[in-house]
Amino acid sequence: AHGFTVKSCLWVGGEADGYKTIVDDRAQKVDKIAVGNPHRWLWKRRMSEAGRRLLQDKQQAFGSVSATTEEEAAIYSVLANDVTTALANPCLRNSWTKSLCVLLTGVWCRVEDEVLYRHNCNRRRSCRPAFPGCQYEKEENECLSETSQLAGMREAQIASTLQSNVFLQKKQHDEGSHRFPYRTAMMAFIIGRSAILDFCAEEVTKLVSDIKQSSINGQDDQDWKALRFVTHLLCFLESFQTSSTSIIIADITNQKNLVLFEYVKYLESRPDLWHFLTLYVSLLPDSTILEYLPSVLCKVLDTSERKLMMEQIRNLMLRLELPLLRRVVRLALSTEGLGYVGNESLDAVKCN
Image 1: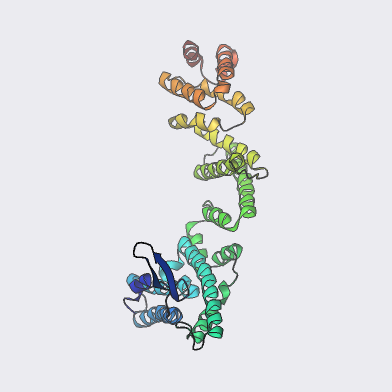
Image 2: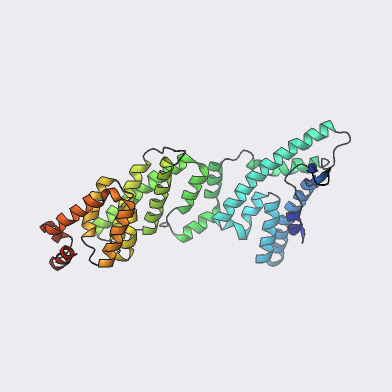
């Protein structure tokens, strides 16, 4: 079996065996280039058998399989579109991403096999003797029979297959249940629009509830990385509504504003991240900006930091520069400003 993996990369088997006509204008002639792999089906059967045998023989002989042997067997199984064996291979079964790639590749190759099978059937009916490459009808039927579970498999079925994978379930259990479901988000994008909207609605509700609960309990155990991820995801989805070919997504703006405001408050609690604050605030509604940002500007005592934020306001929301400055001045001159900064700090704000 050694060496077939490299050869498989050189043999073009993704189209029907035959010839492609290429016109050479310079030489004023027509060239016929051979395309396809006439032994594709026979080769796939041998690859599938090699992948299974390689794993079984090594396990029986040594009780375990070396990493090199595992990878070689996995390559054979993937090339042969043997998804069942590939997902049971130790070097693939514990990785959610690799398992997803195996399933997506398997579904795509199944469609390719069906097209080539129909093509060969037409050639068998119309050509006597059969066209070269069409003589492996038995192997064709065996390959299609072994991959019958992939026929017509949709994205939601792929997600269900991954969720029911015992190896992935065990790994997820070992990682802990508090981890943010990034895989669910990835799968939602693969499934489609409805899954994306359901994921966003569920995670927004959960995140906002967790933040409020943490605030009530006085604890700082919130998953801020998850909040950042959902914030950027919702901003990305909302951008489709203002693109050249706009896509209206129901309630996505309200969800974005809700989560974004929580993320902005997190940035406010981190003075080392204040240089990002104005950018994210500019994505909020004007009414929220005018109500929230002046109180934040009153806390900025460093001259260079204040200058940077004013430049950002001028570049990102010029329309609100004057109303914001007026509110900052009024807040600094009023006793209400003492609630945001101390008496001495308020004097520094007034001087600036």
